[in-house]
Image (cartoon, rainbow over all chains, first blue to last red; front, side):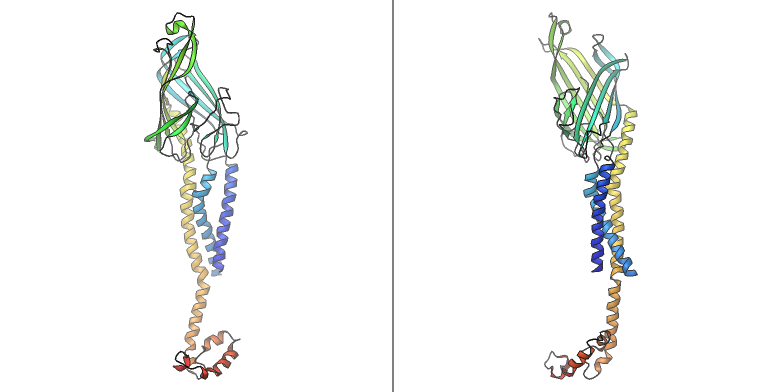
Length: 44
Length: 364
């Protein structure tokens, strides 16, 4: 029983960690990867 | 102590395994997106190009030209799902040191899919009435697929098909090749002196035709446009005969080595981050989590195993006691471990002789 509780606790912490990670990275990292190359036709 | 360590390891293992699953399936898709504050410059070059100089009113031929594209993200206009970028392109005659053309464009697009969004002051050469739809073109979706994409064309001012046509390697990176083919199509009507198109009228309206063969090399992992080969021909035709009378622009533009190197370096950085989130960390977390979980289960179950062993030993010790009269139905060892029921068991054993029949232990 204690083993199951430990595993469930681990899963819950993982979900919380993922939510926090997503929030932090999404807001602070301003996107990854920073690619955006830029050739677009414009002549003519 | 071993039990506690086992429980901690089991919890840690479950944590890491779930993280290994969620990183590529959930986190990457939510976190990896095109940036708000992009700032990059790239240059295409062409030799033996031709164009009509508005300054000298003459057609220039055999010239070298450079087309410089600059993108600057306007972070204040964007948000978590939409980015707004300003683009400025400048085409320059390197031979005669003369500007040929420039263009400004503001566009908003979905940071995950690269699809244009009609908002946030989007414009083309200052004209906000141009509705930009389709794929942005400067980037492709992260995880580009081998299919045709509808990409907005700034000359035609509408989305056009970019057909997947195979793979190619650019600076060691495997790319998808997309081709846009535009057969000569009228894009505008220009008022020009009649003499330009072989007519006597002082001013005539001549149709302008655009023709293009454009190849994009896209990194499918990051959606980055790594290389371009753009052959564009813009001509003026006679309104009377329909024959080409003037070449306004004709150049086969390719990315300069310096731009290519810069873009590939930038893309490699993005690929590294994606690989870390998509592959490396999930594998490491998965393996570490599996090991921790197994170790945790093993250590966490140990006390119970010890109890079982203890109980087994007690049963074994009880066997000789079973030979005593009146004690054969209830293991003495168990009675010894649980003192409470001892008296009760004594009472029960007193009635044991009444238990008869083939199933009664005492019948043996």
